[in-house]
Image 1: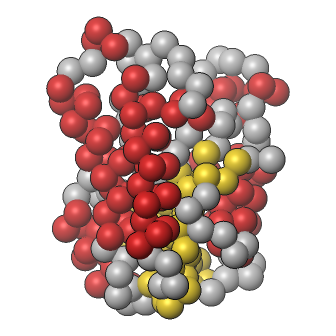
Image 2: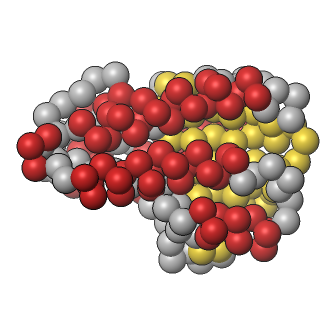
Length: 197
C-alpha cells in the first residue's frame, strides 16, 4: 500500500513509519517534512499536498497541536489555534482526501484520553479530542463504501510522561501505540475510536 503519514517526524509518527515501512510505501509529511511538507492549520496546504501526491491507499495522522493551559489563562486565540490545528486540520485531511484516496482506502486520525478523562488544564484539548471522535463517527457514515475512517485515542504515551518528569511506566510506549494505527489500516472497521492495548 501507498500510505501517507502526517506527523511522520513526531514521537508517534516515527514509530508508525518504523512499523509500516518494511511492508508498505510510506510517505512522511509534517511541517518540515522529509518527504512532504504540510501545515495542518492551513487547508490550502493540505489541498496542495494531495495534489502533489496523487492517489494514496491510506492516510494516518499522528499530528495536531492544541493548547494545554489552565482555563482562566486561555485566550480566544488559544481556542482558535487549537480548533484550527488538531481539530479542523484532521477534518480537512479527510474532506480533502476525496479524489486522492483509493476506493476502500483508510483514514486514521488521532484524538486522546483527555476527551473522556480530563485533567486540570485540558479544557481545549478535551474539546478538540471529543470533536475529532464525533467527526469520525459521522464521516464514517458518509464515506461508507468509499473509504474507512477511524481514530486512535492513544492515552498517555510513556515517552511523553517521561519528558514531563512523570513515571514512564504509567503510560504506553510509543512503539505499542503505533500498533493501534496499524489496526485502523488493516482491520475492516470504520467509525471506531481505537483504544491502545
